[in-house]
Length: 386
Image 1: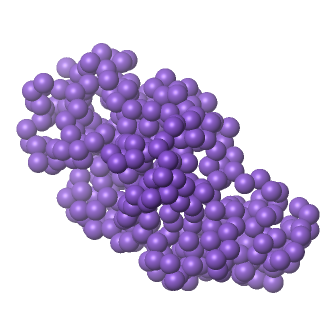
Image 2: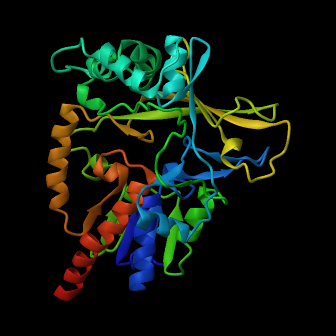
Image 3: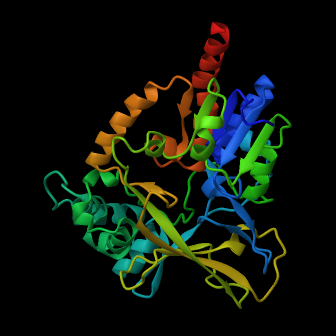
């Protein structure tokens, strides 16, 4: 394919870009060119087999597919068979292990007493009722929702490490409703549809993008060839929105993650897929152990792969993960949204293109909706004008 020929160009081969490309190629039978600066598909959702152990590793942290949306579930199921994995998270505080989100087992371990569901509700209410006034920061908001002891044990240090700042300096809006379960239910998600693709996420993306009308070029920066592309093409842009406009309204704030990979000489390192470390004397926020995601696979004995996760500030050359979304960021994003609206041949989508954190299912749902509601009207309008 001559890169100047395609009338449809997708920048980014993550879920948003991949789903949009598949819909265009399948529904319209139009050639689609996908460009991604990384050397693999899938963005932060990519997974691949570790060469030493064969264990399927999520290169950018654990990705568990879960959704309430039946349309999204039917879509992903066209390209993958998902196993029956159910995610459970543990947290180690003062060398004791607790389930997350907070449930009756968590409360009983932390307070050293038994609770019935109603007793736990009454007890937590008594812990938070003394806090009056509107919360002015994250710490006050968390204390008002779950009480000081739960906050100090599981949230305060984790928040310090995750956001790199004192929780008292973060706005109360950083959190909405902290989950507390007044039962012994330990599943992390409540969604009816859950699982991990049995062939790994890499296989999912290869299948989504297998249509003969789709051409994918990896390891290529869109901005290095922008001037060589068809000027009349519609562009689906899923990269950082501020970079698209050369940061003319300023750089948007993100946090990024660093992972330290270790191949450890044991069959099972920690007994669970993810364990959080909220205490400040531990530098990382959590440890992922990937063999737990595929109980159906016959992995080798005597070796496992873990990733230690660290959060840090994000530079313009780093991979963004979490939008900080300060009031100043919101002000900048409002200006970028006006600029986006003035680009009739570019559709901005995905986590980076919209400056918002999106789970995988929400990203797929947003792409399916944008294809119908945004892309098709523009495509018809441009072609009708010709």
